[in-house]
Image (cartoon, rainbow, N blue to C red):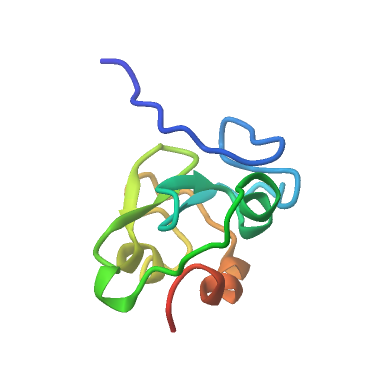
Length: 109
């Protein structure tokens, strides 16, 4: 069985979705931007690479798979991600808990 690779755009993105801007061991998620249906490791990568402004995911779309674990490559819904307490529900990898400080850049509050 071959691993399904989901492309992640951005600046200096590695195989675990770390980027130029966020490179700690726990910076291993990418978020699908609603505006372009493209995964980016962070809002700064989107700002630098995309040619448009971001559009936030509305609350009624939070069951959409829009978060990618860079460790196991499983997609999580926005709600699963928000409720996972910074641990992937599939592989138990730790995510950066500080990412929740940026929810307002991706998801309607």
